[in-house]
Length: 143
Length: 143
Image (tube, each protein chain N blue to C red):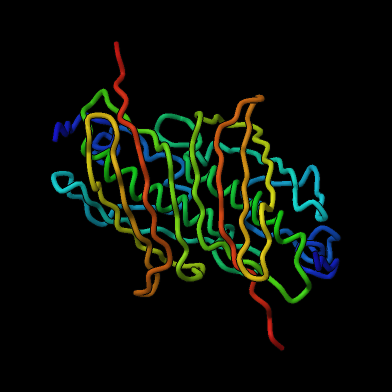
């Protein structure tokens, strides 16, 4: 683990960089971060503007929440010059979600030199609503 | 194909029902619809509020656009009392996307009595930026 508190993730947590707009849009905040374990927990505000014709949260917005739960679990562990775009995101929807609070759990399953495997789940009112796996690739800025 | 112009999809197109909030949030409109072929084309406005720390569109919002491209391709074909929640959404990210116009193509690959298989792609400035497959299940309202 070559975690570096100067990476983008920690600069955002420290307030040195602003929160990413996508996270603000999703009403996201971190409720637990363990960079050594490669795990974190999130909380989102599922808003009326995320709903489908049935009045449930559109699945794609749940996918966005999962991406914003798994990605940071990896980002927290990176060195300052590293970033890790998602290559693939695979989401299964177990239950409809309503407007309101959604919580997330994300973790790094395997961190290779380049390729990393991630997992995450979303919950509402104690029920599993969606789960995902993702593949990400660590890239290094060369200066 | 038991398409029924009284289904929710066509009621929205006809203005009898409002556009879904998720589609409004994504700045979505349809540019082509062929319900007989099970295909359609979409256009989205990728907004600054969808960006990640690198200033690119967060992958999850691209997943939401793909869900809103593939889901309607199926929804356009359904009978009035049918709806089709997504069970699984698998997205691959080929290229970073910027704030601006994104176009989508979605299609029904196989429509069974219950289980349907969908595909879709997103493009920006002529380049493929993300592709997806989805599995959806047709449910019928019983009254």
